[in-house]
Image (cartoon, rainbow, N blue to C red; front, side):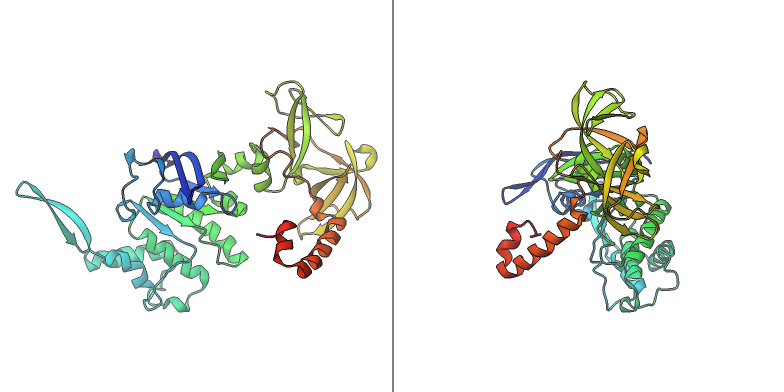
Length: 403
């Protein structure tokens, strides 16, 4: 990655008196693939729109190469955008869709007789031809120049949209959930393809998604957002292995999040017993959140276990089983290749590097209990669903099922 290219300084945004961005501070490097990740309404798309110039923050600064850009319109920024809806022109073939922006005359400034004169300038047809064909090769659509848009698959249409955005040679490409309309297999393929394109063209990609797998697969840097604030910034490995709070731990992958007490450095206590861990820097006997990833838990005979619980639910996932285990009323998720039937008492063992200790936060107690997998909960949910059909939408909202 290169030098710093974009910086947001204390950016705030609100709509109808409701704050959607709360003092966002963020810098983005040249040639970086950065992903804004979070649930709907977290502020990620608003952040993207501020960078693109489609929205102006109510306060704060947007800097591009050190220059303040708050009042610069989108067409004067070295930025292009690919949206979830590609907005391709069905009456034009692939070549003309990609060439569309190049055919629009650009305003250039020239010095004449000691004064600056502005005039419109068209690109030569030969240069248009070369740039379009070059970009179609980058997105693996060489030979598709004369295809109509309606003859393309969803993935091919997306590549056309990317080529059209890149052919103008921006410094930054903004991508607002561009894979959302694709099926699962094609979406996975395009994750790899997007990363390849970004590395080949060598520019900054800023990507918005709520899909954790997309973020982990493609990104150099992930920015996790919630309620208009940045919760954590880091590499995919840092975000997954060292989450800052319960929200990040829950949103990135599956996590068992248990109340604990940091007895002293490298010793955490939960369920009334002490466990060796690798974390330190906490106060003695400080209450903490303990994160244990499902894949870091080994199933052993009860007499060999650090804890003993009862299997309440088993789901076969192809490569693994998702097993829900009840430990004194708190449900854990374990991901394993070993099958354990419902009702069996099992022991579990966690190595010291399987514990990740976090300070308490506003999200403590909100995540990490997999009770929703239990048969009892599913029976209640079915009963609630019948009640909802009888009682209408108001009951849905009261029971917490409304979106």
